Length: 92
Image (cartoon, rainbow, N blue to C red; front, side):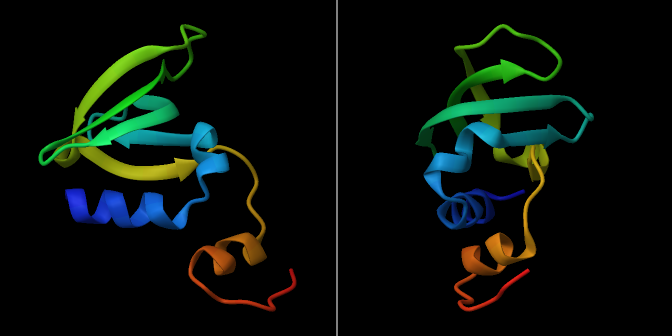
């Protein structure tokens, strides 16, 4: 994933939902985001934890090219997804 794609996705996801976001890396490893600190030119800086652990508050510096996809770790209504893309009035 490129920096532009990551930044665009995080602009769409409400900041209140960022602690529910997981990054899945190309090797299948999962990182749970607590707070994003910076979008650097080649990597993302955030506080969080490794998937499957309770070790919170760790710092991560993840190259964008290692991110396979971004997932919201909870059930998301279709209306919420539509709202992220500017579609209003949708009831699910």
